[in-house]
Length: 210
Image (tube, rainbow, N blue to C red; front, side, top):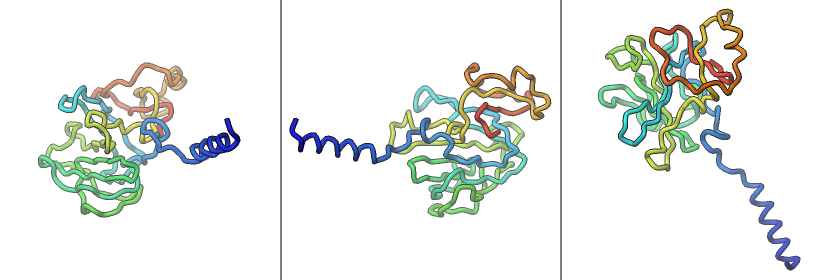
């Protein structure tokens, strides 16, 4: 190999290392979203990816909280704010190709408005029987990735919120946590799909801020 050829290859390699790769959802993108409700919240229903585009599933997570105020998970632009099948929905498009959806949320925001991470976008609608959680108002938070096949566009919001590993149900008071549960390693059994309605406590993960 000539010296010129070797130099060209060396410079090409340096340039490739200098250009950062786009973050992949579920990898470097973990934890890039802020929680859309206050710190006193419970995740009561987890993501359940449907087998096909038209299959039943749960395309997001359900969160209850003591405060009805809903905030943007990240910087973005309001892409939609209005009723869908009679239910008030807000959609925010983010610069990294992700889309967050919030329902049922009453808002004064309009499509095209810019929002920052943590900005108030509305309040939970506790009327009209819109809740996924029976008589308890809760937020359905969805996450989508644009520019991919439809069967791949729905994402689990929990990793984006910084929750990794198995989720277990713990009592609200840390004093009530059994020693073996507090010391459970992150390689415990997989997440249970839905918390029983009559079970007290909250979903929690070893890496979770919940």
